Length: 198
Image (cartoon, rainbow, N blue to C red; front, side, top):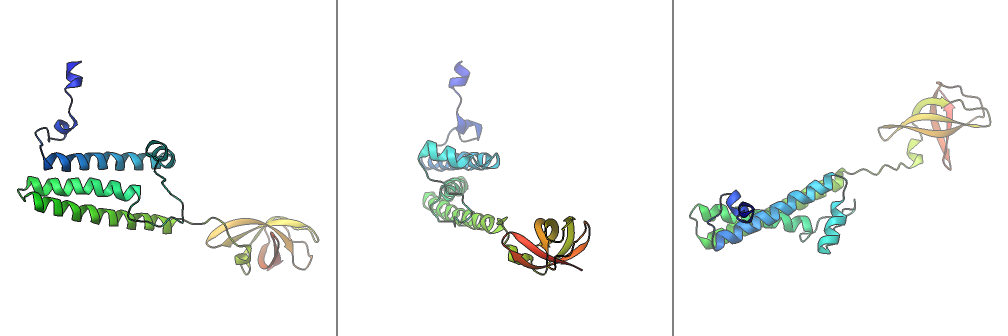
């Protein structure tokens, strides 16, 4: 039991004898790094990080597709803390002096916050909206999936915005279009494509 009570996280990372500014930088790097890794781990297993961090810290974490990065988000603060600690500790251990270590920590922390922001902006731009405006299908060609009777509705498969999609369709000239026939979309009525055989 005494071995467990003597456990020190700073000893684990080689900073057991840290004091003063070293302790400040090490604590900042450890807290920021642990929260950063924990946040992304929770994010990868289903996006529960937003609920966990909202409940634990009362922080509103907006992960919506329209959320543009602002410098003081939870992700940015975690990145700042982690790199402030790492940069400052590196300079301090390299005999750079306390003032230079604080400046280096501030510069690396700010740069990491900016880089994290740009990374999240990239993630937002990579998201796609799965909805398609049916009018974008006009002029597309495809095949009949389910037979279209003369005055009824069937289904067709057409390529819209680079993806194959299946829609309800009716014949433009009330002619029957058999399964597997090639078609072209000429119009849209509500949620139904108007097609003609080609």
